[in-house]
Image 1 (tube, helix red, strand yellow):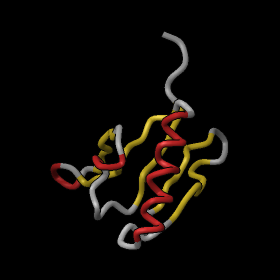
Image 2 (cartoon, one colour):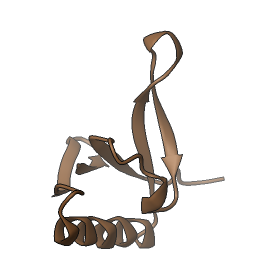
Image 3 (tube, rainbow, N blue to C red):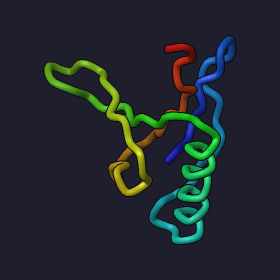
Image 4 (spheres, rainbow, N blue to C red):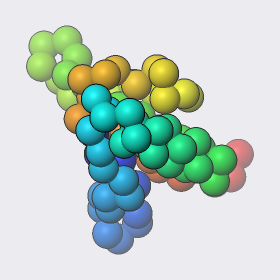
Length: 81
């Protein structure tokens, strides 16, 4: 599983990567997931939706991330109101 951060002007930047089947790697991914959310970022998992459309599912905890997900994308919350 790879964690990517969307960065203006740079696109996706890899911030963590690991095999969730390995307990130590999974613990590191869980800790990094929490760090990103604590820093104010949102998280989404890309999925293929109806009719093959690419979509994303917002997640708030690592437990909500599907075990077979290849990527989790972190991005800043929208500014303003």
